[in-house]
Image: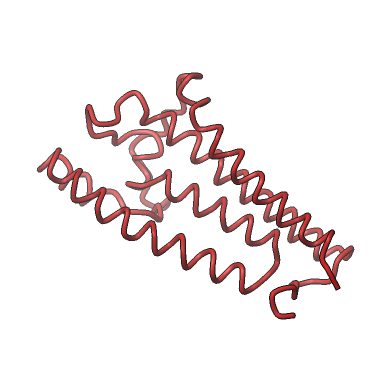
Length: 168
């Protein structure tokens, strides 16, 4: 029954705390995805966006997805699920990022190289600071990110329901 083993017993304060932390991480990831997606949408393919969340890392959409998944994994409190989910997503994003960066380098040349030199790929260096917070986004662009948020919310809910309805 390794796949059913939880980190902490149900209905304990620690279990509840871990669920709350997981939910907070899901929300943080979704907020980052919303901000990044809405920020880049008007300019995608037209110019190299280096402001807003893109001032902190080159791939904030992927970072937001990974954070949301980490939150879902925390809620699930199931080590094999965590390992399998993170390995699959990190592996898929590693390939996707390499392809995307090759295309961006071909499209934006020296501007892309300069951006890469000063901006980390995935994990922000907050101690160095980004060059812009730019929190202004258009409502229509933000709404386009809602389906991804619904998917992660459904995953988080299913992880919690799997605990409640777990078979003996």
